[in-house]
Image (cartoon, rainbow, N blue to C red; front, side):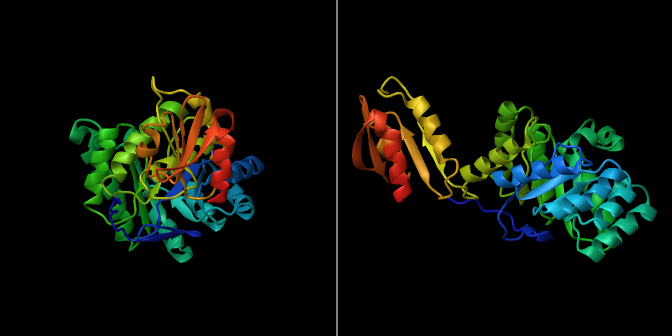
Length: 351
């Protein structure tokens, strides 16, 4: 079964299309000081190599906004400027070549400040991402709804949307995030019913790499299962490369994107007669750089392995000191345990 995605209007962020019939794109954000151009560009290069497709940088002051020009010259990924409150930073970032703004129009003052930002964005074809987080929900909405709720997040988002629409600007992307998964899911469902703008999804402040990856997979997966989402970011306290790797696995698991090898491995049990756990880790490591869209199975039991993993393109199943290699459930070779990993990799190369 293939997930049916809601069709949203499309926007263009540099070389990447978001929404419409475009594939769900992967975003991340640098954690370097944007004013340090070399460090920022080096991190962006690592993120691109990991599979990041859109990168966002913080722009806290004018020095960072000016640094955008040098960064833009050295990278290939579409570049997003993350700006709060000061409309002058948005103007400078656009002058220096950003491909998208992340700025909430309601937070940068009155129309005297909002209008020039919108006009320049129109002239340069730069979309604006509205980002509403549960941690910064307006006080009047917290009071109205008795706390941070999905309804409050949606109302806040629509306030910002209406400001841009009143200026005849609809080149919009929306992010509506909470660290609470039920609240986030409810907010996305409500908002998706009311707008057709592309949605950037994620679970904000998800946590450390281990716990945050699990929380993000649960939350983003729940949202994706409703057909909602045009671009994603996994928010982790750690190396942002881990965000990209986690995002790829989430999309791969839902069959929404193909990124090389999908590994299927059994949890092991009392029937296992080979040292499967290090074998599975070694196969995962060696498959990491393979671009072929393959499903590779690592099973501990010859009796059930090929049958349970018959949807895999290729796999191994262990026996007593040896194992079999199978393709689409059909056994093709029997190999001694010590040669099993190498034999599997040879077969993968032949596919």
